[in-house]
Image (tube, rainbow, N blue to C red):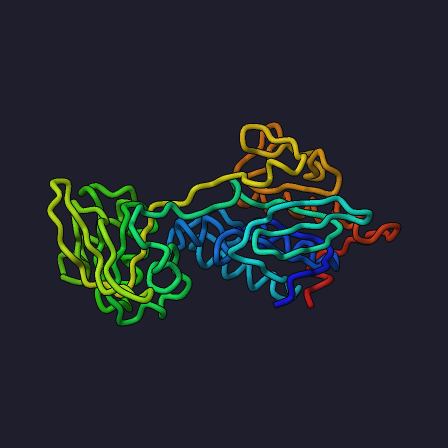
Length: 335
């Protein structure tokens, strides 16, 4: 696979704001490459609450987080973005005509400008402390669900007590052969309505509630699980048949290498000029939850507006000396 690329704008973060940045840049004829540390696009919307309804997206009285990401990807698609997923932006070097961005997997991208739309920073899953866990990751242990059909007919063990654990237990119960939910206590940290639905399915025998238990060990060979051993608070153990383990213990936000790029950082946020979203480093912009300025509202729709402003501020960097004759999308259309 090609490791060196050239583009107009590097977007760091493939959450909703990063995806909309592709559209806004595309409407101004600027190409984008998108980097994200998660293994699929969507940011927190995909990783934490794909089934949760969102009510404050203009024109959408209600839309699930997962559906919002799908629509944003569809909206960005005509502009042919290139995604570099499951890798973290590592270093940024200033060049004569822009920047060079490198990732932890050796990808190098040359661009005229950078938009940081990384939410609260790069994210990584909180991994359970199980011996041999890495042997099963990517084959039968997953920290997020890409497609429900991948779990059709399988024995799935879900561990955790938050929204993502409950949401995926409900969703996968429609396709999996068996669902077991492991949690250390009776009370869940999820939407009460969702918890009630899960308990209703448990009463029908469609979901097995394994409470109060915690993950203890994995059984299997060659990356393929055969069972998940769990233990209660008294140390009593039992084994659940399993083809797949989905540990949902949240994700940890970290600024990571961003803090070494010469960008001003204030309490894990990046101060920007609210008129352009530019940071203290010319050519590097920030939008969405990671960007801060006086009276900032942390809403997805605010991030959408911010990347529109950033795209317009970047245009003269990509097309120096070329006047921007802005035309509304209703007149211009998309490719």
